[in-house]
Image 1 (cartoon, rainbow over the protein chains, first blue to last red):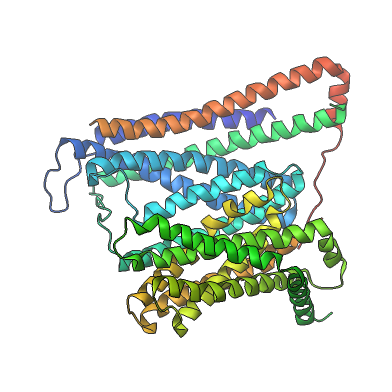
Image 2 (cartoon, each protein chain N blue to C red):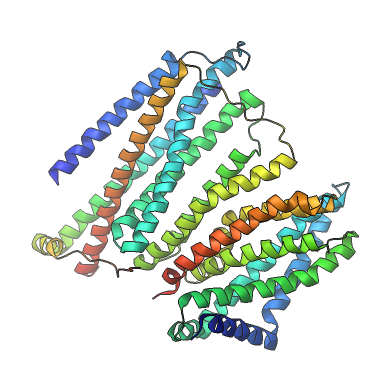
Length: 235
Length: 223
Length: 61
């Protein structure tokens, strides 16, 4: 028990430091972005563009988290081992936290970049639906008391939910080619100076996700133990 | 018991039960009709061309009616205890799933068959072409495929009826979006070739989720 | 400029909200364990902890 506690603490500290370094790199070290034809973007947009270093990695982490939930759901259905269910729900929770972060930061970036807080382009729309899917996941979990059934049903839903994501994306994109979008998602192509910072942030956030996951899983396992104790002691 | 016999038996049982009371069917139909009328009032004053609203309206009405039908079908099974009976019968669990899905599909198609002419009359539009019927068929299949297994899940929770739409609609988005899109395109005068890609996409959706439901249905109904 | 600050702030806040919720739940669990210990007496708790873990009914395919 001691060893894994130590490992977790070390990892947490490393992750924390890595994030601080990432913030420094993103805000100070990374070169300012230029427009598609190399022009200056203006102070507001140049600064806001730096959101990309945290915004995109957060989006990546949220999708990774939901993918892990699907894999863990399959694992649970095949083995019946409770650890898979704990992994599934922990990962989903982290996924939702990061999804909120992405939706919020994206909105705030959109205002200076496209002059609107929101647009219904395929990516954003799909992402909103992803958010709804996992809120539904937790509503399902919340409305069931029997732990074994809850885990099973949640697992089935977790699989359906993630499978539907790419399909949803394509269906909306199809629709959008008929009804053209007013704002094209401007892709600030990453110049060579920006790439290392970007990939560092990507790696940092992935590490952060893993640390969050381990902590959350540990919390859930403790909670399960306490529940068992309560049962056995007759409370 | 032969798989397809079992499926047929379940569908026939549901049809006979429904034919007696016509409970579910009538509430589905009335609900769909009411939705259309309410939408009509909601948009009448603001939208210049009602035709642009019809696709969305149609598919929303189908969704609401479908959800109602799905809910009630499984609730009745649970309350009467017939689900336990089905599970004891010597048949593949998957047969229960397919039987139920086909039954739900049938009810929804019947509702749509009555709803469609009414919409055509209200809005003076033609929606009866073969391509559009195909669109409705494939879309409704998607609805039934996912809706049946989700309603089996929802009926076992505390929240029951309320939970089904919450679970169902985010997953159903591709069907609704594609369906409304294709209805709109056909109304605008596009041809079968133009919607073919989208149609195949819905078919793909139907297949993927039918397979997924087949694989996971056991876990939903076991004790 | 302010947009950038807001953007980063939102991400930080979401992360911290998550962390804080974890910490709070952990504290609550600790409190529960302490309460259980007091109510049941030390040896009962140790005995209960050492019984084999309960596993849910396995579903194999």
